[in-house]
Length: 322
Ligand code: AVJ
Figure 1 (tube, rainbow, N blue to C red):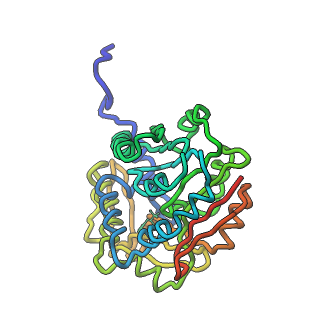
Figure 2: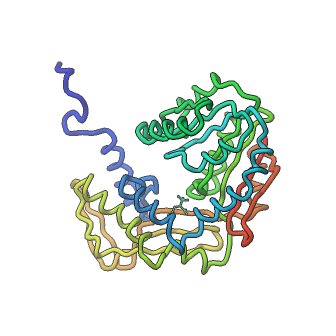
Figure 3: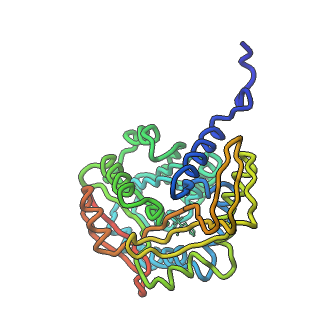
């Protein structure tokens, strides 16, 4: 056997295989869906960064304003000698001001699946805070392995930092599973600092996900482009359009791609039919009330000590303790 050849062997890359499986099973359902994580490839992530800078997209800006206004209160709620753990940290930009504000933090443990981004971020933060103990953990925070590195980190208390309304991507059942997995990694006295978008005027919500510069539309359609490039599919991008709307009962913004005609799409020997007007559901963004999120936190074992909001009550950062 020739072991010198690295994957992909036989032209089968396991990651591509999983992507293909997910696409085929999602498009085989009555309501066609695609997992939202696939929106965030390199160009998708770049488009999302542009979304964050849009005037219509209040989410990122509002969260940043709350952080900068309430940093002192957050640092004193957390207290000295805390270890900050950030699942899905990415470029670690949001945590920096907090780390600077904290009194003698015991350490910072960012987790991310991308080693390149994580190591670059660690270098940047270490240069700014030379005395901070940083332990970068490469891995998927929904899997166990990456958390196994945690016990080695000594601290007065541990605080999981989960900003960006990432929790909004999870439907309430999945959110509850994720939050209780966080609670299970922590002990009495530990805490969670988490950002959520709040339920609000549908006009404001719909503008944020149907921006006038059409960046969100490009972000959404990039998923089809990605399926074409990586899986050799033949989606005609001009025959699908972006649609986002607020669903008041489900309390979420749903993002879809609408087929503009009766058409068929081919993906590796499989054929998928689309009726005119039929949609592919690509992402959910759940919105919470302050009370609703407190109740969710309580149901998984967190008691909420603080909820910081902006003056228009568009967004909230919750501090909850185990
Ligand atoms: C990354 C999940 C916070 O739901 O607002 C923004 C994703 N999608 N515009 C959000 C998103 C389209 C975003 N989150």
